[in-house]
Image (cartoon, helix red, strand yellow):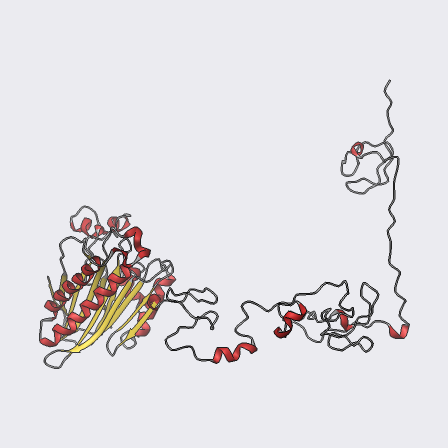
Length: 480
């Protein structure tokens, strides 16, 4: 016959600490299984808990008075300024605490003792040394075991003299730590911070034209470029030039391609217009010159830009769009999908887009296979069919000549802008009302419009105010 052991009575339920009723196998409050409680062992060894002798009670007249913080933080909560040595007391060894800055009258030791700040024990004291990251006296680090910060805050007063020192001639100073030198790769040698690149955001303003280019919010570099300039025709009348180029991201070195094209086209126009070349012919020749400049990049050594190695099979490429204001004419030229818009000063007058995209969507619409809404809704809509580059099809520069009969604004831009204001009406609505008199301010506003819309691409826009006296209804337009 087996022997059963009686379950010991429990004073409290282990689950909810409520006293169970006599004989209950489960707690009536929380349902805890009381039978699972292990039986009390027969032998119950005990361990003495030693309590250190209490320190003599301080006389009533010397009762501890905790100091009240004199300062509060922004939430009106007292600042934690109390330190162990601020009040009378003893440490764990029964020794009285002393002020960190006041030498002990009996031992002659104080804050500078080998035991560290506030320690009254000698060199053999068991108290461990403390490492202070914010030590005010770096000179004593070796003696105390403390260590100085590896990268001190440049805003600290002790570094003011270093910050005021002029950098070495030709050396760049980090914009983050303001003390490190920037290496050839664009990174700080002190803190490793990547420096802003010159092309991340560019602005230029002349008397009659302004341009702004921005990297956008998604791209790691700015692959757009622009060139704005002014010159004089043989009769002394002014000519204003604006060129905008957009690097093809799927090609190698798109940033170099756009920069080379913009520079070459601008130089060609500044050379041909003063000679008396018709502006429309000059624009055609400028696009050809830009194409040759981009083609030349493909003939450079393959290792010229190692970070573009995965795309070395694609020659450098870009699109181009430009505008010339000369002799009362407005000449536009383009290859690719960058655009020119006309926004009249009188916003009640009709606006217009002056270019046609070299794109898959435009081809579908021109062939009558899709309407414009269907074509631009397709995922292939922005695939370009014309560009500048060694692997492009036969170059076909587009040029058009207009003679506006009223003042207005010429908007020359990449798709990084017109993707957020595609129709002429949407572009006119995005252009500030004072754009005619403040083109740089208006260009900044248009770039901001694209960034507010998402900034998925590089954004570049050039604005050319066109002033003319009204000469009646209608305008002449020739397209080549």
